[in-house]
Every structure is written in C-alpha cells, then in structure tokens.
Length: 75
Image (cartoon, rainbow, N blue to C red):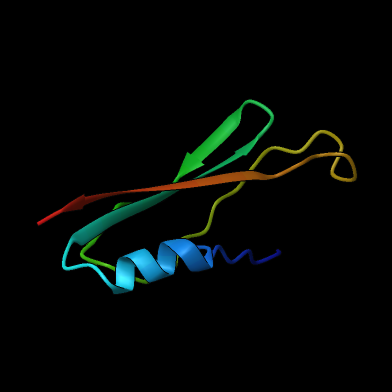
C-alpha cells in the first residue's frame, strides 16, 4: 500500500499563517469514476489526515490518481 501526502503550496501557507481566519479544509481523491473524500479538518492551518482509502484498479500501471483540496474560512 502506498502513502500519499498533500501539502498546501507556499502561497496558500503564507495566506493561512498571516490570517486570523479559522480555515476548514478537505481533500478529494479520484481514480477514474471512483471518488473518495477526507473528513473536514476544522481550525487547521496545516491540516493532516490519517485516513486510508481503497480504489478499484483495472490497470494499475495506467491509472492516474487525481487530488484536489479546498478550504473555507470563517472568523
């Protein structure tokens, strides 16, 4: 089983660290039509998820894992 880490880019980290906002973050992972979402992390400027996901793979050598993350802020 492989582990994957997702880290916010430098611009987003600067914005989070220099803000008084309390961000909520989530990550979505997708392989073909299979989609998995992490739990929301509240009030986390540097969120980490300790979740495991399984995906059905038809051709592991040609499958592509796509990830997207988003956050919303509140004061």
